[in-house]
Image (cartoon, rainbow, N blue to C red):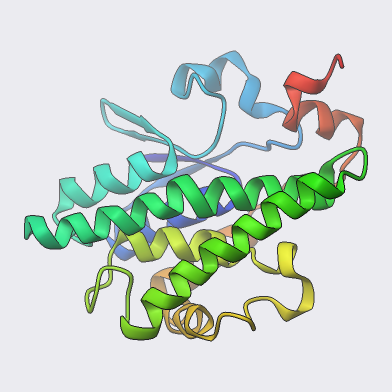
Length: 224
């Protein structure tokens, strides 16, 4: 099994699941700051040119939530067997996929990477992030985990992006969302999460936001 990996929130959530399942896997680092995600070789793995991607023998899966679902279903763990409980898990998993993930990505882009200051864009996405965290906060006030009292891939997905909250909210991080903060403290104690963080620390990627990096990350804007 081969994980195509950069230390992004989406890659990290998959790394957590692989460690939770105690599966042996190799890592192929993809330095997205250098544009390695656009190489023809990687595009054969993921035509969308994004990390993560997973090759499991003859099976290739891309998109982090597709990988989470594939592995959970294959191994029969971290996804409820009962259909009604699975529906709850899927609802929260998709809230992360369609809400927290893209809103966080756009907020971080306009706060840190955009070549010009765009107050409307920053306000738009930060406010959406706050709204989404309020939904998650309400859930976690009354529920230990997103799907109830059982830890699932939905929780791994939330951890991946909530770990980056400081890039949006600054030093206060998740202080405005104490239930989410409690959740993050609990999940961060899991050995699989610690192993995923060790995997991240074991790989060095380019960190300089120069013209090469801007072109690599925002290729569609390179000629505008």
